[in-house]
Length: 452
Image (cartoon, rainbow, N blue to C red; front, side, top):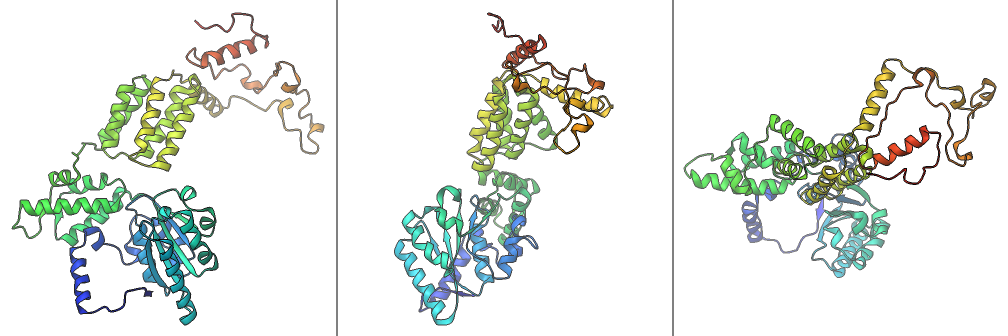
């Protein structure tokens, strides 16, 4: 593997580099050298997974690595550099100019012409390149002269030019889970010659927000605090107090029991239409490092189970909040979750749709029902009409009312009632509409639709 480097290296510059390496932040000192050392991205880098296969076979084409800070984008690019026979160049979109891009292209052309060697260009913060800079890259990426490895924390569909994006494969890196962060922290303790209480380690991992670099930076501070507290110790021990001081946050007691108790109180507060309590329990979950996706899933379920047709927009709000969690991530997604919680807590409530499907499924399990009525059966395939399928079916759109009275339930369940709308919120209108249909679909008389 060849790298571009400045000429004239000597013993003094080598010694300076070694000194800087020893003084580098813990996250930099622990930067993985091999694919197997990278944690938390098994979907991309596990055995047989697509990105790993491309890297190990040195057949990588241009890619965009998209993910939150501290998920390993730069690390992965540098590991790629160690697996390739191509030259490796690195630019930061924060400081690079169009001239820098053109110089990189010129060097790539020279290598290819002189010794047949390709070039990989790692472009950090690729979303910071303006259109002119991205356009300057495009011909070289399109021709294959440069294999672009771009890294971005922003949605590349919004921030990267469409022609450049279409010539690259997009790989999304996920926030590191607590177990992956804990693995990094244990490596960090070994590198620092320190130990840690399990409670302290768990607190650091839970509060990292999926950012491995942030976790290691906080660990470095915690180890320094532990060493200052006990300067004579061969292996200083990081305590919970050290971890809390390094993070600037106190540990929220949130074990298995607290998890279920707080979630239960959260759901019951929304069901009980108390937005203040609901926001309190939301804050407790977020401060304890609860998975935002778990919270969002509970809100989506509640929107149908406890609000239902009393406010049909609640499901849209909850689903939008869940999408925002995936798109925005914490900490910003706390705003989306809070909005959904307030909407659901203050919405009119009805569990009638939930009760309806529970009743219907219980009937089906008990064998209530029978054959589908003949007039409702599929009559589109050859021979269906000879069996009487569809005979007698009345098409509702042919009736001026848009509705006709006819049997839809099978004979064995002809008179069952599963859904009985409440008189809360929008469900009041549904109830009135169903009443009119039960009355033969008559048009409402003046005043029929008035609400008290």
